[in-house]
Image (cartoon, rainbow, N blue to C red; front, side, top):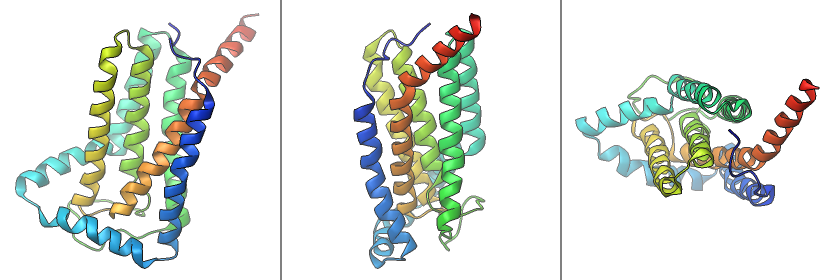
Length: 226
């Protein structure tokens, strides 16, 4: 089964990609220069979140933060990619989803972390988390993977009435995963926002290239059949 929406232009998605890179660049450069405003911003956002801790909230956010971790995202991406191949016989969509998730949520995130090497908050961590802090891998990865899944759902959905519900649920889930990273003490708010900006930029670029990827794989398959 072919995607029913494959004629949109790359330009709006490329514009979105570049637009989201602007706040990411501002945050990243401010972190690199250790600007005072980014420190004040992080304190302004994190203090009320950390001050409102309860046992119920802690249990909720610890459970929720796992949905943005590598094991959960890998499982979701793998199972959904296999479903696309099995149910829709669409290898191109499956490969797109798997590759864009792996490159964006995995390699790109780790590359930026290694470049900036921002240390994590020195407050108590409610979960075990190693590595560097910026950008938040959970925030960035959840937006790329769950956002990519929502995009594919819309592409293959026969009932457009569900589209806005899927977008809303995905947005809420990604937002709460990002908030959970602040709550459990392993990220600054700027890490989360930076992760959203870079992840959104990557996802926009990937969505913009999706029709071209589908056409390229189709042409390649036709060439191999000759």
